Image (cartoon, rainbow, N blue to C red; front, side, top):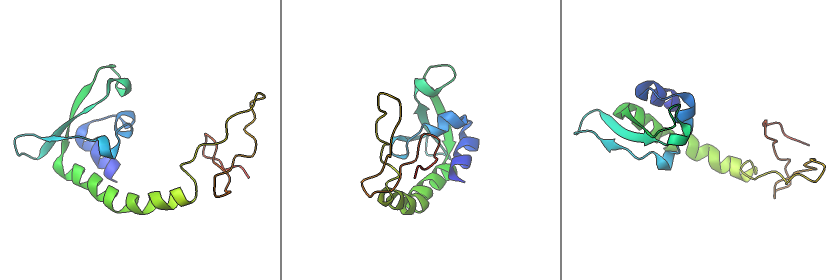
Length: 116
């Protein structure tokens, strides 16, 4: 829900909003008002130029609440399951083999499908 509020408040496209990292979302409050100002990198905008955007304070509060609650609970769980680890490198034949995490669990491929 926080992501949707961020997009609808700011007018960013999904790709632009999805490229923002929560710790990199630097914002500047505009004159003590209800909106904050930030920038999106040129590499993710349609115009290939950095883009300034404005986001409502309540939408930014939703993102902060998500980081402190849902995300704070889910990320450590995914780390324990090895979901943030990279798959084994491809061999000369292009086969990834039996990619496993350090915990021994199968690693998801680029489509999110787990190999067993």
